Image (cartoon, rainbow, N blue to C red; front, side, top):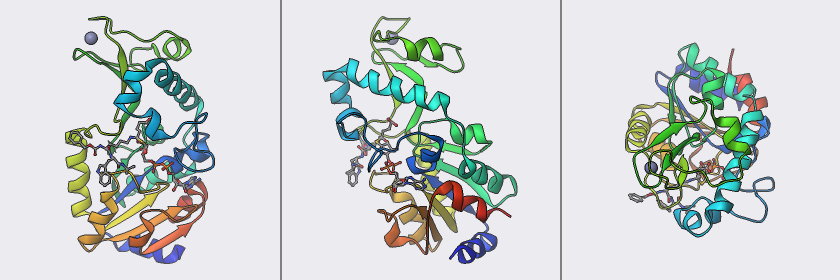
Length: 244
Ligand code: BJW
Ligand code: ZN
């Protein structure tokens, strides 16, 4: 199976990767669904929504600050580095991620498309104020605070610059991702349950256009029905084997 995947990649002219929370699991960042995927007793659909934020911004900010703290302590794992290396040697043309952590970038991936935003950016709920907390050097102070964060310009609530259920994905990122998927002759899908749309269309687009789908996951997912090769295992153990 591994050799089949390696052959597909070696023969490809335009391969891409599509990643989800499972690729960061070995870095200590909990996934959304499944055994380790729960935060307290909530499901993502109960926290990652504009309604939840309107109803209880304290709860939603508590969840995001908890995630920010975990992500700040986390380091990229061998799976992130393997994808960065595959880009460096010219095999991968882009990494499309649903993750909001910065781990692909930290590992050295250059052409990164973030479909669901970035947890270290915040934006105002009223005006067009945006801030990158890592860039502004405020991130540690920000995550330790228990106060609701307010816009320095207009005083309204700040929110994480991520995509919640029912919200549109960033137009430019989604267009880029779909264009890449239409051109790709192979996609490596890593650590996603493949149930959240429109992101989950990506492997299906590649497949429909005649491309090959390689999946790396510890269990079957919504992507598995279109996978040409299913590599069962942890991303951090499987992906380095695809890099020569
Ligand atoms: C390992 C591993 C290891 C573990 N190694 N593997 C079409 C059909 C049906 C529904 C819809 C549709 N189109 C839209 C919808 C509605 C909705 C949706 O998809 N709902 C479904 C759940 C039913 N989609 C939306 O609402 C989207 N918006 C939208 O469509 O807008 C339309 C619109 C247009 C114009 C105006 C207005 C609206 C938005 C979706 C936003 C998703 N947001 C979140 C939160 C982001 C911020 C944050 O991080 O907090 O994104 S929810 C959460 O799910 C997060 C993730 O990116 C996303 C996907 O999760 P992921 O990455 O797959 O993680 P898990 O936990 O599910 O899976 C982990 C996997 O790893 C598992 O398979 C494990 O086995 C595996 N694994 N360890 C390898 N070591
Ligand atoms: Zn404002």
